[in-house]
Image (cartoon, rainbow, N blue to C red):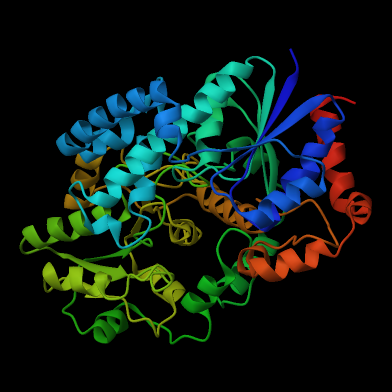
Amino acid sequence: MKKTLFIIDRGKIDNAYRLSILSSLFIKKGYYPKVILNTKFKKIFKIYKRFGITNFAISFDKSYLLKKPYILFQTIFYFTYGIFLFSFDRYQFINQFKIKNILIGDLVYDSSIRYNLGFLKKRINFNFIKILFLSIFKFLIIYYKLKKKLPNFICLISSVSHATEGSFCLRISTKMRKKVIFHNYGSLRIYKPSQIYFAERKVSKIELNKFKLKEKNLNQFLTKRFSGKTTGIFTNPKEVKKVFFKKKMFKNRDHVFKILKTQKYSRIVLFSASAFSDAPHGGGTGNRLVFEDYFSLFEETLKFINNKKNSSILWIFKEHPSSKIYREDGIFRETIKRYSSKNIVIFPEGYDLSTLFPHLYTVITARGTMALEFATFGKKPLICGDTTFSRLGFTLEPKDKNEYFKIIDDFKFKNKLNRKQTLNAKKTLYIVEKLINRSFINSKIFFNDKVKALGINENMLEKKLRKISIKNMFNDNYFKTIEKFIKKKFGE
């Protein structure tokens, strides 16, 4: 039986070129390539054809509804079950909706809230119905294509979040105990079955113990970080600059109350909101979240505070810097206004957040980097889901909503970190910003920088790469590096 190489395209120029070049190494090993696309995008077809790849399949076409009745009937069955489960309990749908015993509820839900402020729509709507039906159908198409080629196939993907062909392929393949190679501008890795529900790149305790950079150098890195002048590869540098660069300072605790125009409170807690439309499950962050999504965490926390009278805690809420990018303007403030209380205030954006940290009891976030930044000040943050830096000993991590609300009801946990925990937090922030996802491929043709790769115009990139010969691409350091990686993992 011939060996099949499934190339799961995502409709992006950069990814199509990278997967084409990567696939050439497997073609040499006797694999027959087959590209699965989500759209008939002519430019993408031409890219693969440049590399001699001509076998294509579309993950969904209207004609499939008549041509593949066995998939249509199964889709209707799973669709009906999914609608019932979602209507009964959204959280249960997210964590329990499976096809062929493979979880996809989280991926479907994340796609349903991605656009048009879907996170505000708590009930079933047309957008959710459409995404659910198409996701099930596409999943089954990919499932049977892969099953037919068992055990002789390998998958190349470039996406692991939302209800995409790449995400489906990852979960199906690993369920079948097959290797999946993930590759984009910043990463080249092989997924193991045990890793698919965790952060794309998780810092480990072993890594922290081996990390040898002096604390003096870590503190220099932090000084630059909190002045907004540093660059990183985990947090968008523009967001860091927005939060820390050239801001006013909180002078002391009394000054905090004065600036916020509130009475004095015994404790101050900062709630750092995430971008509500961002994917709360899967992808680079991890699958587990104790709430349905980031907006649910935000709104239910406000509701809890509002119902708790005579509190001795001042709650400061901070909006995510990227909320405007997701067209969430006004929602943050409108929601706070709906649950207004004298001990709930909004963070004044003109001030340096790092000068507030020393006066806080804790920082609460779904899984944002701010928790990690706060921990470098020697205090324990509270996070509500798996992330790159979870379970390392310096974060408080409730297992469910009940435990979360019990914690924020009285804040009786010990919030001080010891010296080792604080040092580990500093090491972790350095690792995630300087080492994780740093491209080890120094290419003269493709982008090595995450921000540049995400910001490039697709048409301009396509024109640029079209002018470069295949020979020059194979002579680039990029090809030599991935060739070395594949030989190491799969042999000559």
